Length: 323
Image 1 (tube, rainbow, N blue to C red):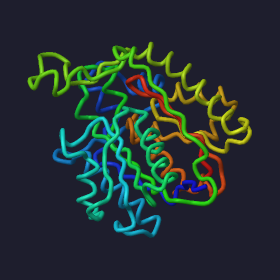
Image 2: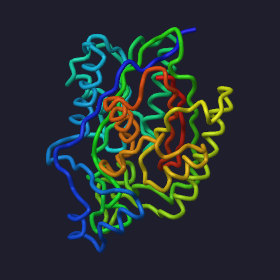
Image 3: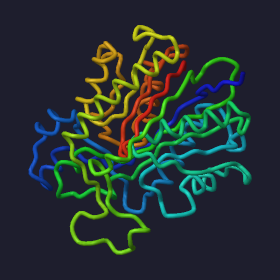
Image 4: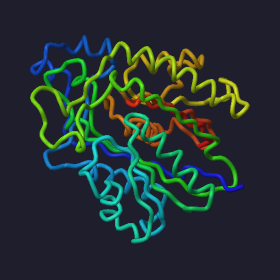
């Protein structure tokens, strides 16, 4: 049976850093308040004119370089984002052009909010397992600062911009053991951006077109569903918590990450956390964290990784991988 392995990782962060101290001048907040409730100290913000495709291209190129591959080696690009460059073509197609991936390759976007990278990984894994592709570039990229209401302290302190990528390729042994995806559209009102093209081209006054979140309610659902998907994932593979070397969660905030670690009975030393320096980068957060831990040497070949995410939709999912 054809399986899928991660050949390499890559990431990119915009140059500009926004600290909590800078946010103190925008909204009624403090560095201590933000750190205590979220674990975030700073976040990166895309420059004017710097788009999601720019971030994604840089992360994708870094992953290809790490794998020792050329763009001609890629025949599938799956890009997860909630902040695409435009309605169409897809941001993945724009990345294809900028990386000079050959015409005829498959390229498309996936929209699953903060769960987007896990969804994209699942899709690419299925392409490779069924022979639809031989090598895939899977990217999570966001310019989330463009949809923030900078007067809403409940959301603007949380998010940042960035991109992460992995190269997936066919292998004879795992690799990706399994992925598990779920959604519940009934809870849309708790976390959304209440505007879209088919609802009208003109933004109304107020926060329409910006992130709206009922944080306490989202937190409760996230902790419950992430705990369940962790159990589901381990049971599907006949593994126990002791088999997991690293938990790489969506970097929503430190409290949700710590709650998931407790569910796994993992010490925080086995949780890859970049939320302090990146904030919540939505679909980019897991591949960003993965790349950081690969490049600093924490994650080694042969170790078992558990990826899990929760996002608007609601969507949630996991992937169990032997790196």
